[in-house]
Length: 388
Ligand SMILES: C[S@@+](CC[C@H](N)C(=O)[O-])C[C@H]1O[C@@H](n2cnc3c(N)ncnc32)[C@H](O)[C@@H]1O
Image (cartoon, rainbow, N blue to C red):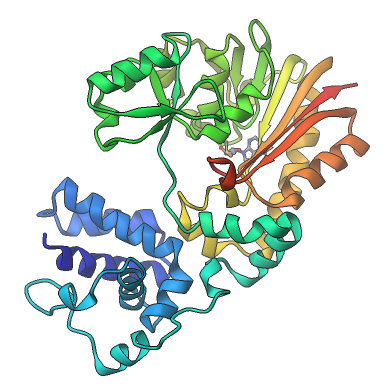
């Protein structure tokens, strides 16, 4: 496909997303209906769609319309490309610019400074209240693609050896400062899933902030750990690699369906335990609550969620997190630890929950940390309590 044809495809997909379809289903539907498109085309179109969603508000303002076409035109302009070389109307490229579009894009100032933050107004208010002077930088960081981070399975090899093996397979990486296990990919990453390093469990995909959160739990060797909201099991695997005896649990057991295979690949043993099998009398040295949340710290990865979140959703997340904390604390042994984490940037889901837990549950806060994208990974919150 030509660059123009890729833009035209992205315009159609963005229109569907603006009509309410999820980003992933819209991309999958397009790929099914356009089987001539190769993997390179699909990846490029996906990048345009996601870039457009990350900057939806400012790109639409720059391109003159809240539509797929407006967003893509704005994006092209933001990236310093000449739209006349792409909106040519020839072949499958988008039609040439109209007079009205030309008028909008020739306005001297483009999008206003506030639009440049590219978050909903009510979210911007929260970011400003919670993060003060750091808020503009955080909002700006959420407009760009996330880096690709890997977790080295230290049970198999050290980080330098993993870098060497990856390099032999054509993937260049550098150590990430947020965790001793973390690598940042600086070379091509599209073939990583087919690499021997991934297939043999030497590396996993995991953001450096999540790896930092696992490191913040302290030494895990020999501890019994309940990963109460295990989901796909990213943290379970990381904790098992650090020597913990992990029991993975999730209210939606289907989300753990790949975990046994992933654990086998990593050479780890993890007990996968759906809610019906979690004995109410069991006690663990550490219970991790990696709670469902707004996902605001990970909006670079799922940018459509940035525009879908409502204040009511946020309140519902806070209420659910509190219910889960009350339940999970029952599985901690006295003198043990409970860790509460989210991939949220909002105080209401993070430090405010930790403060409430300290005053209303038998928990004493030992330490906590709020990471933002300015720390080099996703936004992530981790708090660790002693059970008293
Ligand atoms: C942030 S995700 C977990 C991510 C996972 N720990 C990882 O590292 O990949 C939150 C998980 O909480 C689960 N969940 C939601 N409500 C729950 C509940 N009441 N009890 C336990 N898990 C719940 C969701 O199904 C979801 O998988």
